[in-house]
Image (cartoon, rainbow, N blue to C red):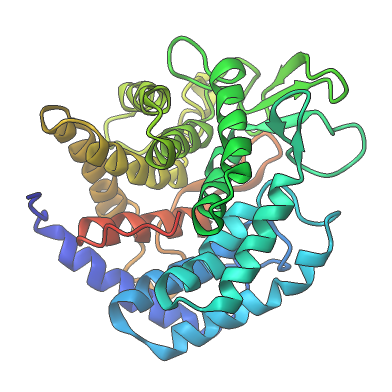
Length: 371
Ligand code: GLY
């Protein structure tokens, strides 16, 4: 049995209170980044649309607060029109529907939510490039061959679809994509590329791009976090040891490169001048992945992963949390969305907040994940 650290109950109480407080302004809208203390609202089609309803579901699971439930349900319904527009949705279908209709189906067994989640899985499966064995990333001209590390977090939607339908096609696609990531994104030191460009006709690998990291060969910390959590989830669904090994490899790279306070730089290979730029969202996501790895390895190994996950979450709670502030809607400060484009740098990000809430909920003993 794992022992819950002393600070966790306090962190969970603060989290629940803050989510409830900010829900009165945000309601069923789609926040992304907090600028000057207020969450900026995005259109429903933006990739982050699932995180706020996902956070509300995490808190609802514990509190049974009907206001949060109804707001999360309204968010889910607002996504409906996107399900008939394959030119709007992209690889982020998993982020968007796993945490909305997927979460509602897992919590309430609602059939309409199951149907929506399956539709989303079908759209995601349709993005698979058979020649290159990858799921296409964004829409747009001349980028049909682009695949990104983030998409690992969308694969649970496909694994889930296979498990509820009994049809293995979805899982087959997820496995092919995960194998492509192992072959073309991973480096021997456990760091990963953000964007890999393939020839969409032949499937040949053409180029690596830096994307949201500093450079093609650098180590964007959120990309590393996507690899840690995404690969451990692929192991969870398939039992393929290679995925667990890959999750551990990225985790070792991540842990070895953390600064003193356990919250990552935006890019582990950032130039000196930018080392003050942190990405708390990468820390929160990696922590959830480390806690999953801890559940997957032997008891002799588990302690290191669990303690590292706890240490990151503790630092986020004590050093990065905006708990008392009446003028800041974000839970966790100092996230970085896109440093090369100077977009939303050093702000609270809804996905950083989401993964923090998921991490604390896990430490509270809620082991059922929405992924
Ligand atoms: N999936 C986009 C990002 O991590 O910013």
